[in-house]
Each structure stands twice: as structure tokens, then as C-alpha cells.
Image 1 (cartoon, rainbow, N blue to C red):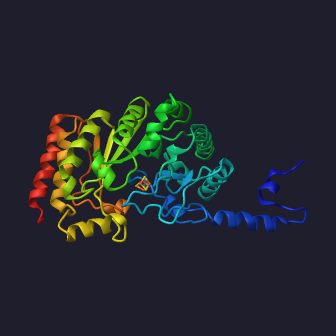
Image 2 (cartoon, rainbow, N blue to C red; image 1 turned 45 degrees about the vertical axis):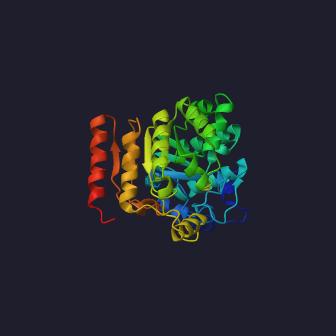
Image 3 (cartoon, rainbow, N blue to C red; image 1 turned 90 degrees about the horizontal axis):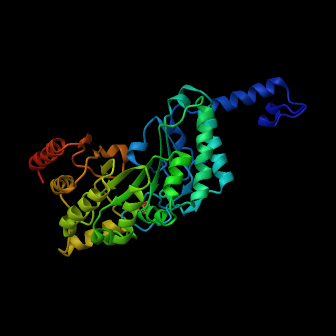
Length: 353
Ligand code: SF4
């Protein structure tokens, strides 16, 4: 009879027990102490720091990489996947990736038991064909259950780009299917702005009709959505249209979560170079911190929402610029919303610029 232990460690007939113990010791020594250690291992992950939403960069969230890079990769401010071409991992490769991540964490270890949420990246995992995504998620769930003692994750989330979300409504029931069969219960939508002018300015690659279809797809999906908005995007020229059109989309969707992350482009990005040239020519300019906070307050004020609204210190995600990180606030009532808006307005008045 084949000893599964031999298969696991490639033990030959001549391997001594001492050698086996040595292998086990080496394997044990490779265990990580925190999930953050995993993401630094370039043999496990391709993207730098496993690019993900700020709320999924927490010690109890385990992240996997189903796709590498972003299938669009043309937004002028984005350096999230610089130098990483887009690729969907074949299922076998993804399976190995999941296995290797869990090997590093271990079975029923303290760390394994502390994990309660899963994020499946990269930049647009929702672009993967539903049948493939479903198979991959099924495997993720299976490994989660076996490594954490039959627990099920409290949340499974992915990033979805507007076009990918909009496309899912074409194939009737795709999002519902993923929700029911695979337990995805949250989609992070990088909307950034509801203004077509702003989206064109940053080459987001989607139009108003796709935005509307994405809203419809999410509203009928049973899943929660978390929408990312970028104050300051597009600069002063689009100040009003960013407020009005973003508030309109948020009112249509009424997402469970909204996260604000101010624009903070890398100086060498196309966005920064263009904004710089326009500023020098007097044609546009970046918003001041005060304007950014006021723009955020106006979006919240105008949107008909009862969401949990977040704005976090930028050291959490390392990419945005939030002059006034207020944490997370539920605005389930008009009073809560008015309180937040006036808090932001007052803080903006106290700012130097
Ligand atoms: S869709 Fe997202 S990840 Fe892709 S280029 Fe744009 S901002 Fe970057």
C-alpha cells in the first residue's frame, strides 16, 4: 500500500526517519506568522502587496490571485499593476496557488482559525468567465473549510470593473449564480466618478450606458456592493459634474458601502503629467485639500443613500490622499448624514487651503 506521507514528501525507499523529520522541520519553518508575510513572497503572488481594497487589507482577510494585472490597464492615474501584464491563471495553476498559500498558513493553526474573509484578486476578477470563476471559488471554499475546521468565510469579495459588471447582466443570472453557488457576497466596484467627463479624462474605458447596466446588474444580484469614489479626480474643471453625476449613480444603486479615496497620482503617471501641463497653462488644476473635503461632503449630501461611508488614513492603502480621514460612518438616517456633512464642512473651513 502506498503511504500518502511518502507521496507528500517524495520519500524514497532509502529515506531515513531522520531525513523525513528534517523535511517536516523545513516545511514547518516556512510557515508565516501573518497574512501580510504571504503577500511579500513573489513566488506566491505577482502583484506588489496583492493590490486590494483597503477594507480587505486586514489581518483576518486571506487574499488569492486568480488574475494577474488588470484586463484594462489604461486608467491614466493607475500604477497598481505597473509592469504586470494581464493573465488569467489556468485552473490547475490557481489550485496550486491556493494550496501553497494554505501550506504557508498551516492546517488549523491559530492563524488559519483567525481568517474569516476571502478576497479573490486581481484588478477585475469578475472578468473571468462565470464557469471558471465559479470553479475557482468552489476550490477556495473547499480549502478554507478543510483548513479552518469546517468554518465558512463570512465574506468573499472580488473587484469588478464597470464593463465586467455590466456584461454579467447580459448573461442572465450570472451574478445570482455566483452568489448562490459560490458565496461571493460583496463586489468592490471601482466607479471613481459618475461623471462621463471625468471618466473620459482618466480614460476609464466605460460609458454612461455601461454605468447604468452595471447599476442594474448589481441591484439584481443579491450581493452587496462597495463603491469606490475618488474626490479630486479630474481636477477643478470637473468639480461640479463629479459631484452631481456621482451622487446620481449612488442614489440609483444605494450601495451598502461607499469608500472615498482622494486622487494621489504618481508624479510620473500620465494623469499627473497632464494635470501639471494644464495647471501651467492655466487650464485646470488639482483640488486643494479643502476643496477635496467639500467635494466629498457635497457628494454625500446630494446622494440619496443609507450606506456605510468610509474614508481611511492613506497609510492603510498607501496610494490615495485623504486630507480628512473620518473612518467609517453609517448614514442610515438623515440626521446621521447631516451630522457627517456638517462635520466635514466645519473641518474644511478650518483647513489652511
Ligand atoms: S481598472 Fe482599476 S486596476 Fe485597471 S487600470 Fe483602471 S484603476 Fe487600474
